[in-house]
Length: 74
Image 1 (cartoon, rainbow, N blue to C red):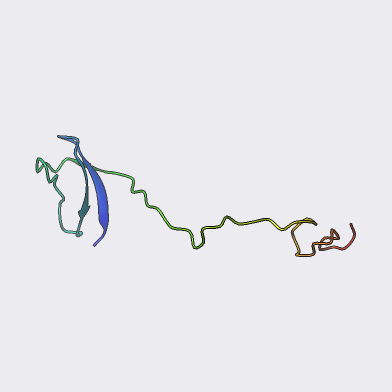
Image 2: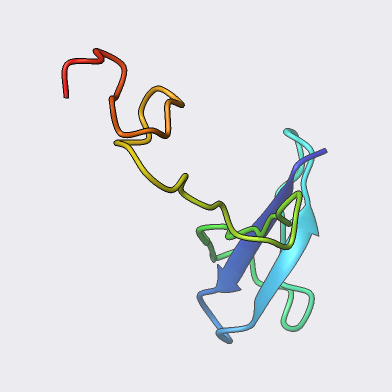
């Protein structure tokens, strides 16, 4: 069952609801069915707390940090 976010068109109450395909959701506050589906926003957690760091020296594209770069022509 998907979770949807709604705003009631009658009383303005915003809420989340688990909705089956054959079910008509209603506002838990005033029981109206004039609802507007809202854009759901979610958050994710990063795998590590440290930010990504760029390598020092060279162009950083090939992993050679002596300044030659991947083509070794510099």
